[in-house]
Image (tube, rainbow, N blue to C red; front, side):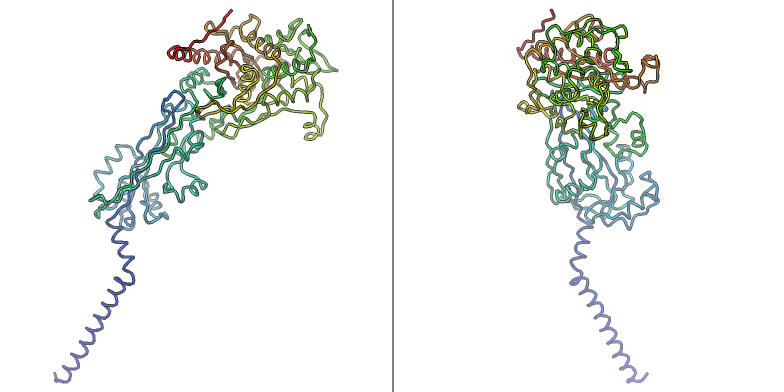
Length: 601
């Protein structure tokens, strides 16, 4: 080879070397200068992991300090950011016990770069141990711990306590700037939803250095979580348990109130549901079973169901008659089992009739004919006026769920809505709590509370307060009116001809109450009794009451759907509940040096 060719080759090689070094230099400059920040972040994220520390949710206590919920661990298998592209999906799916397609779907989900990718949630301790033993085979696989709820009493009081679930769009918007993870469980019902912002704490975080397998090497920084606020509600969970048990599987509702404060001591809606089903994410089969249940377990019957109030409504009609002075001294009605108006016959529940009936006997024995005549004298609009005074057809303001208001008809309503005149027969029906008249179990409880408290009704409250709740309404009634109503209610339970004498009379306390039956179909015209027909066509049963008679502490309403008669279906439940509560109340009162005197004469 000539020296000239050699020189030429050396020069070309030099240029190549310069060019190569120049390319390397440009690439290094690009990596270190132009993209340096990005690669430093990748490097940092490969060794630094931010772990969320879940904030314990506040505990819900009943009025006596019993915990209704407990916090517990909720385990999830997750991948640290950046590990998704390197994972071998088939063996990982087998380890987790999930379908590979589901795993791939989760890995491809749009997750913020700082959030781990949840692969399987709600792991049992056995699953956690199984995964931990094999985790080294899957770089980036970690076990995360969050906080979940255990509802101590299960179905008991579930409509009040509520449950947790994944946040909806409205909650995600609220959580956006709060530091609360978007997949955190949130209150979806009852107290859990109503006081969610107070019960929810502030999550903490732990910054740790990890190796390529996701194993923690060093704690860099830690911010502890802030626990949520505890809530104490007015519910007496043991009373709630007692009442729900007394229903013995029947469908219905009950409301028990503290006469002085308006506190809700019990709020029963049956059938109920187990909120623990929601604690770790409810399964599709459980959700379908609840939604397809023909008895609608999610319906809060105490606040959201509206039924004809039956003979309980006679208290309103009696109060109106006494206040309006339409009953002269010695006023009586001769009940022969029915009255006729034109070609129509309006029957009393007692076919043989009650004979001569004054207002006391009419309340005690629940004579329909007496109230037909009184209703005729009052007229529907005057009846509606007094019904509204007692709060029927109006909201109570309770916030547990969106309550129904019931309905009280008037002549103007029928003319404006149905374009029809009001008929006297419709007044007869309304006078005994049938026809268009509707009320909720809560409204029925507030009605009897008004009688027990001589017209003063405290706003019903579900949260314990240091002071007595605001007054919801004051019904101005003459002293003689109140005494007549109270005496009649006492007679219902304690006089031998009273409709609840055999089912609600107590040997411990003097109870006062009123039975009611809401007709579903016209059984008497078909010649059938309740027990002779399908359950879904049987009458509804009501009983409202308060006790003790001379110093009322508790007022309540009990409703048994398709229960038949208030005396046989609803009254025994109320008796059992009130005796239980008063036994407990008196025992506690005596321990504190208090005393309750009950005159049983």
